[in-house]
Length: 394
Length: 221
Image 1 (cartoon, rainbow over the protein chains, first blue to last red):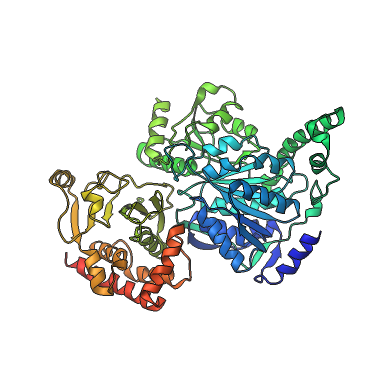
Image 2: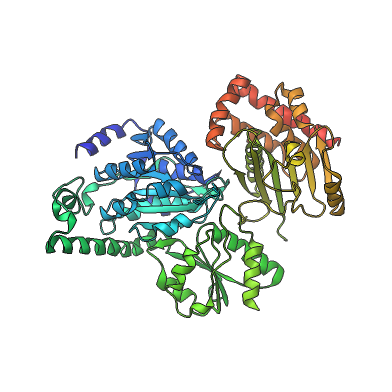
């Protein structure tokens, strides 16, 4: 526990912030209007998150957030910060800092996510409550730094909890809620908070912020399912011992049951997501004959389409905003689409991973129109969604 | 009351302050109680590479994000956007709404006859303002060209935003009270701009002068 003792000593040098509960910070504290970008909103979340250590490696559109996080370190809001040699090194190092008992933060984007890929299932497997912001961008050639969230498809089965922010407000709230949820004893998993690059990170809009003289109370690593850096407990014990190689029945059973436990821990996050984020989904115009299902910035574009259609065409469409991708709100979506005759799923990626997720969990899949989709950094105007809905309505 | 929307597309080159101009305009609009959403569009952060920024203004909450495809106003910060197509949007007037406004930073006309015919057809108003020349004239530097463009825009459309709110937004932007990071490169650029103007106070004053003078210039257009 020497690291956490050092951390406590350093804390007294920082700005004077009162430690409060997640309920106070997220749900009760009065909020004030601010006009800022998604990147700046991330920094405002970090400012209030009581971070022990942040480690950075720049990649657009993530760079501004970690640049501003570095400024927060300089101002004393974060106890330690450095720039690592690449994204894999960042993700490995925050894992180490988390194993040591610290509350950690980092962020990445697109190709950086892919470069660090090996570490994400490792975070989940060692049950570390790391919160990482993913500013999604294109990953294929020709390159794009604009929004495209195909990297989320690659992370669906890493064991990590995944939230998808619609806008800067969500990005701020979900990062702080991420810590509150990740640090529950019965959950204790990494949380990825995803936002579509540029259309959130670089977009300036009004958001509501709690005061900056309060922050999340200190993380207590003793509540973790694995005591900090204790080599006598699984899975660290398995890293040390030949058990890792499943050389006998006990190690085989331990390995299999541990993987089940990681999945079960994500299921146990549901009630905490309901508490801190107001549910895994949000529904607008429930019971409408045509329902849109969307996550991230596609939600905003769908809201724009729904408003235009209502004003101009007199057509009412409903909207299911999916906030939690892992755990996936299968029951909630099945219930909210029970009466729909058509389900439209607009996405900012070529693969259509959200459509696949939905089609894998609801009845009567012929109702699903898996699109429209844009990728490679394109915008998705509301009119494009309206075209698809009108065809469905015919 | 019917929802009123105004969408602006600003096209220019990296380093000219296209992103900052949009941020200042958006800040001023929000300060006066309307809704605004501002976002930029650029590739690799290179000086003189095509850069666009977008300002959406509305009486109600704005959901739409990304490129403004159907603008009411197009601002061209550099003639190269038009003459050699150094732009994310081609042609530069693509999607301009009927009766829209085009403001070009140039002393001389640069729009080709073919485009002129298209713009006449949709009854667009085209205004040339020598914004770089005005910036040099009023502040001794071309670095305030984005401010003279902003001032000229306000002069051409008085209903857009209260000029005093723009002045306050300029102060907020450059006084360090609210830190705006347009991009990783622009953070470094800020330092260069600071040394160029020596003192922040002088810089804010010069930018305000640039806006005011360009405002008056545009009023006479």
